[in-house]
Amino acid sequence: MNYDRQALIDQLILHEGMELKVYQDHLGIDTIGVGRNLQDRGISDGELSFMNKLRLEIYEIGITEANACFLLGNDIDIVEEELYDAHPCIDRLDDVRIRVVLDMAFNMGIPRLRKFKNMWAGIHDGDYVRAALEMLDSRWATQVGQRSVRLSDAMKTGVLIL
Image 1: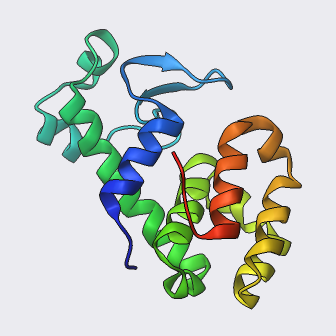
Image 2 (image 1 turned 90 degrees about the horizontal axis):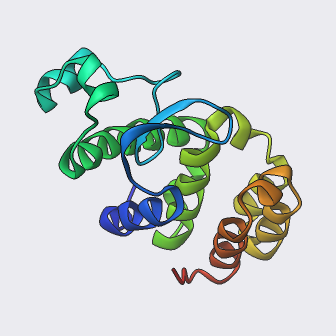
Image 3 (image 1 turned 60 degrees about the vertical axis):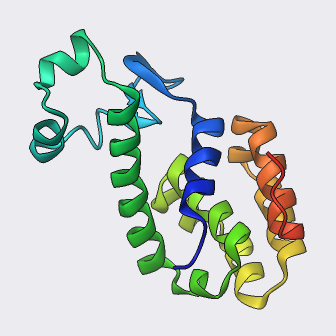
């Protein structure tokens, strides 16, 4: 998968924010860093070891910006692999459109993103206008507001303006 990873990191930090202390997201799920869901994904023993932290410290003290970026990098690796397994066609997309679908996958997860059947049909056909319209015709779009408009415009035009 060929895309500008640093641009994706900047994009996800803009869209998700970066919180160095544990907080509850809009669903009441403990979260830290750049959208790391502590309930579903948690923090692995290897990640704790790398950050030189105990699990309890994460909740009591929080993490550093460097730790948040480390976790984000791991999350991006996981999302890349899951997305490619679900839709190998993303390899044919340009940098911006890859980042659009990675951003969506990061935000909602692959199972929910798979349900965007008409969007994926548009992507498979190279009909990015259709794909963009289908993105906006979703509950996700109403939930994330401006993020969906920005990503839909990027899908349509191939240009992402942050």
